[in-house]
Image 1 (cartoon, one colour):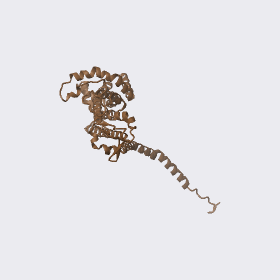
Image 2 (tube, helix red, strand yellow):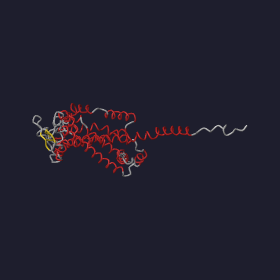
Image 3 (cartoon, one colour):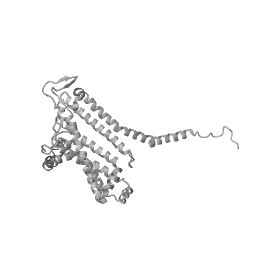
Image 4 (cartoon, one colour):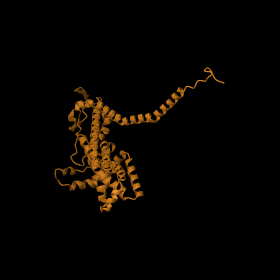
Amino acid sequence: MTLTTADQVPPADPLPATRAALASHGRTGFMQEKLPRLVTSLAAFVPMAALLAIVGVLAWKALPALGYNGIGFLWHTAWRPGNAYANPVRTGGVLHPVGASYGALPLVAGTLESSVIAVAVAVPVSVGAALLVVEKLPRRLSSTVGLFLEVLAGIPSVVFGLWGALTFGPFIARDVAPFVAGHMPDVPVLNFFRGNVGYGEGLLTSGLVLAVMIIPIVAATARDLLRQVPRLPKEGALALGMSDWEVARKVSLPWARAGIIGASVLGLARALGETMAVAMVSGAVLGTVPTNLYLPMSTIAATIVSQLDGAFTDGTGYAVRTLAEFALLLAVITLLTNIAARVLVRRVAGTALPIGRGV
């Protein structure tokens, strides 16, 4: 029997099924490819956005203080909150207490000097500890020492500050500083290491406490870098008759040099911004640049945290705006330090080192 044209069944329309398959594939492709890419792209911009937001808020808050203090703020030493009982005055459109004046030089000097002391002490100790852990200690003992380094890195800064104020600072003032101050030659450059050693609060104690705090950061990073040095170059150096120290100096350390510099910069950044520990052991003296290694001082971060409550009592808001100016200055110092460190790391890593271009 032959079917007529009217009796034939029309073929099914493939378009709805195709559209459904394409839609399903599109949703799957978005979930598997585009969505992760979008999320990671947004996450990559979060640190930059946070930094810009912080700097922008600090600049906005500090703008009146910047206009009133001027560029001389950087080298002035005075710290005078002004007369809180007199009627405030307006200078250049900025309302402030009578006689208010602030200078950043003592705080910048204290911040940089304590951080330099910390890095100068911590980096050699950290690299030496990393070499000992990687090259000399048995595996089990090496793991134990590494665990202690990680635990030390997790101790809160206020604990370091209390230890420094109660135990370490008095020990330095009683048993270490008198020996150093008494045996330094009386020459202009070394006079900085002479003088009254005080009672354990000051620049030396602050720098050494900061050194103890950043040792775990630098040591743990240097340890991981030294573990990546291939064994073949070290064994070849030993076969040529080099001592262990020569192998470390000519093979291991050059291999990890750029990474160790980067780790040192991380420690320096921690020292520049440390607050509570320094506030507890520095002596919190404002308006004076320390003339020897043992005098009390303060840093930008420690001053901000110690003066913030008092600044809120200033009805004109000028004290808070000045603290925002100090915070902005600290952010600029940290940023410039990191830029200089990146340039140094790239220059060092560009000399055909095995670990690449660095951070």
